[in-house]
Each structure stands twice: as C-alpha cells, then as structure tokens.
Length: 215
Image (cartoon, rainbow, N blue to C red):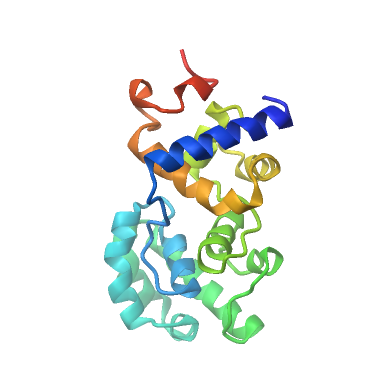
C-alpha cells in the first residue's frame, strides 16, 4: 500500500478524474427522507437498486413510517419485499429496526453512528449511507462491494476487499471529509460502468495509470 501522503495525492486525482466522468453521481436509491433511505438501503443487500426502486413506492404507501413497520405482521412485510431476495431476513431486520426506533428513540432516527449501529440489522455501511446522504453528517466513507474492490486496486488500502470496516478506516484517513459521501458515489458508478468485478474494461478506464492492479 502507498504511504499516507501518496494515498492522499492519489485520492485527489481519483476524485477529480471521476467527477469529470460522472459529474451527476449521486445515491441511486429513490427516497424521501432519512427513514425511507434506511429501509431502501436494508433492501439493497444482494439486490439491485433498480429492483429496490421498483418495490419501495408501494412499500412506503403501505408502511409510511417506523410505527407502521413495527406494528405490521412480519409476513405482510415479507410479501411486500419478496422480489428483493432474502426477504425473510430483510423483513425481520426492518421490523426489528423500526421497533428500536419507536421504543428507544421516540420514533426519530438516531443522528450519531454509535446510536445508529445499535439499531437491529444496521451496520456501519447502512448507517453511513443514511448519515451521509440524508443527514449530511457522514462518519466515514460508505464501503460497498464496488468501493472496497476498487480501493484495493488503487492501493488505498492494504486490506482485502471484504474487510469493509478496515477499508473504511483507511479511506477515512486519506479522503478529505468533504469528499466522504461523494467518493462513494463516484466509485460505485465507476464500478458499475467500467471497473466491473468480472470483466473490467481497463482500456476505457480513466484511472488506469493510478491502478496497482494494471497489467
């Protein structure tokens, strides 16, 4: 892995280059407020954002807030989210999380990472998505599969692509706080469009000269 000054310098290049390529990069989960983004993020595990966005309009019409989810039979939630996959576990997480919000936070979402990750079914990735995108209070870079994989290729972390918490720590150290939210969106867009996991298009990659994995 590069030393910290070199990683900071590389991050500057990455943000500049990808901002030029993906100038409208943003969260691809449709939502109206932090709570909807929380639920959509839980649903996005092992599911495309496109599919989640197909499910959430009817879902939020039926269950508009945390209390509605908390009081609903879990079977009803399961049926509403079935097409997102792993629907039983996701329904359990959504109901339990909503119950925590009602019982422990008076129906309001927490505003700190420490309180957020205490909600049932919520880890750092989900918490950082909501805190950063919907609340403007990121505690770190959101590390999904694209971000983790590309961070490794760019030499921004010495950890494996599945060590999301450790990768986040490395990225937080070399990415300016003002870019914590933006770099996640940029790397996700780049991972979907060019640096795909199974068949990266290295010939079309604007980051090629900054990539440690290049041939």
